[in-house]
Structure formats: C-alpha cells, structure tokens
Length: 183
Image (cartoon, rainbow, N blue to C red; front, side, top):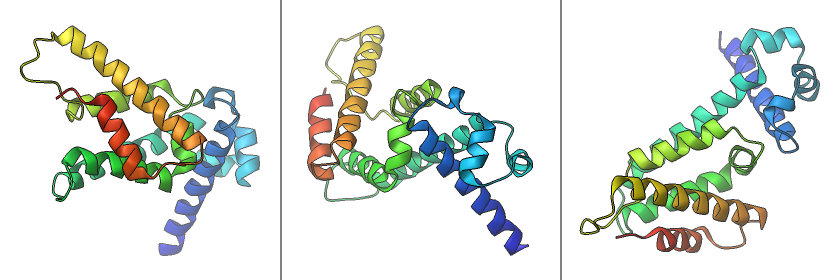
C-alpha cells in the first residue's frame, strides 16, 4: 500500500513539474497530453489514471498554492515581533522563493486568469489591504483601488523574481506594504 502511494505521489509530482516546465514557454491551452507525458516520461494511460486534462494538474497546483497562502496567513496572526502584515508578506515571498517555478508560471501571462482572480478574492476576503476607517471612500472606489494595488504588487513581485530576487525578502515585504499602505 505504501509503495502504491509513493508511486502515485511520484507520478503526480513529475506531471506537475513537467506542466510547469512547459507553461514557462506557453499557456496550458497550448500543451498537449502527448507532449506532457513525453516530458514526464509517463505513458498516456497512466496520465488518465490520475487526470482528465492538463487543466486538472494546474488546478491541483493552484489549490496547493492557495492552501499554502492560507496557512501562511493563519500562522502570521500568531507571530510577534513584526506586524501580522509584515509576517504575511514575508511568508508569501518565502513561498515564492521556495517554489520559484510554480510562482513564476502561476502569476505570468501563461498562468490561468482564474487563479489570479482566486488570489485577488483571497486577499480581499482576508482583508490584507486595509483602508482608513475615517476615509469616506465608497465601496466601488475601494474595489478599484484593490485591483490597482494587487496588480501592482503582482507586477512588482514578478519583476523581483525576474531579477533573481536581488532584494532581500524583508526589504521587498516592507516595500510592498509601504506602496499599498492606506491606513
């Protein structure tokens, strides 16, 4: 039984890694099961034992990323020494460092726009971008600001990754927080 679980984990891991590698060059819609299986050195019947399409693998990767972000946010609430927001942003940046290939693809033009929308929704639901209580900005204006702040933050993180993460994560976290501060 344990040997079977290891085989399943290995197969899913190699398919996910292969999909990410292919998505560095083009979107998932342009990736065939045949080329995915060839790169993963997995036969098509094994692929179909686990997935229906490359989109299924992508959804699994996206779900794992969102779950990791949720865990980072929960842990950040209990840490001391820095603000919850600083811990959370540094946690996200560490996740990106640890999962550079995933992160680049998920937030690139080759990634799934639905994932980016889920990410926006997650950040909005968690209230990670705050507004002044005294600021009379209406809900529509807040929604526009949120889109601007999130897109700007993602672009900044993408540039950071593209530049080889040349700024320490704590400094990048402070920069992101400062640029998005509305308190």
